[in-house]
Image 1 (cartoon, rainbow, N blue to C red):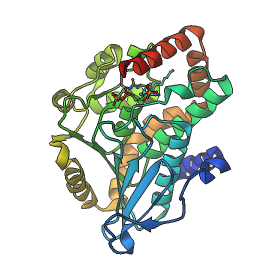
Image 2 (image 1 turned 45 degrees about the vertical axis):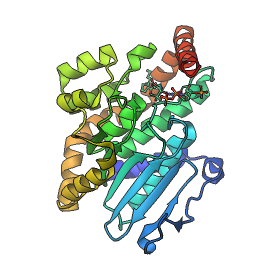
Image 3 (image 1 turned 45 degrees about the horizontal axis):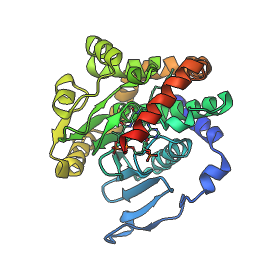
Length: 303
Ligand SMILES: CCCCCCC/C=C/C(=O)SCCNC(=O)CCNC(=O)[C@H](O)C(C)(C)COP(=O)(O)OP(=O)(O)OC[C@H]1O[C@@H](n2cnc3c(N)ncnc32)[C@H](O)[C@@H]1OP(=O)(O)O
């Protein structure tokens, strides 16, 4: 797809050599835990562990950025690289996205990347966030989110970009776009993704209230597709993947593109304006104060 190649080019332009070199095993593979044939050889990077199974054409991609998989610039970059690597390997048809950190799928944007940072860094960071959303939302692969922990804000962006979502039935694992509770707002392309998933009225209410839905409510509003016991999340995600892979790839990919291209194009048409809007908004003194206070509150919670 022309769009995909455009996104691919942007991803390459985004990468900085050191992000590739720092502690990554990109390109190197290591035997997966428990051995297995060469289809089970793991690869990835410092913050993203990829467990590919060539026999099934399915890879499990684990976010591994403790303690809460906060979306640092490095994690965003490594996620895009790992996904691109799987998309370019025609062995693979589907990816299950999950967390290697206990209790948390992804805590959303790494607030230290936008608190007290200069506008140039905030711009670079936001471009990486846009890139990850474009890469996942338009992926030719089947993406299943196996949500095995809390999934607020930016974590919910990743889950929403997938084709379907399986959530562990733990009341502590809440999911939603809670940006307003931090004094910030979701960008239009995230609003659009929410509306495409749970409808306009539910999105309008949930976005304004910054709702974080416990599993039963997330299922009821349509934010997730299945809620299962925690020890069944991965197996259920695999079963769901099998259901999607039963459909011929080409027809499914064309249909996915038909459904999602208009939403993605809206960002692609105004990507620079979106970046400038993000930078001017988060760099405001009032927003910086609000984010710092929120981070402080998080840090004090442990005390
Ligand atoms: C135009 C503007 C557009 C704005 C962008 C809109 C799109 C996206 C926005 C976002 O994603 S903003 C971030 C929203 N995220 C949250 O509100 C989640 C905050 N975190 C939590 O609720 C909890 O940490 C948790 C995820 C439920 C996990 O709780 P747990 O008790 O297991 O861990 P904690 O003790 O709370 O945290 C451990 C450690 O990690 C730090 N931390 C947590 N979340 C973040 C984060 N998002 N960014 C940076 N750091 C985070 C937390 O402060 C603790 O740090 P230490 O005390 O160990 O230093």
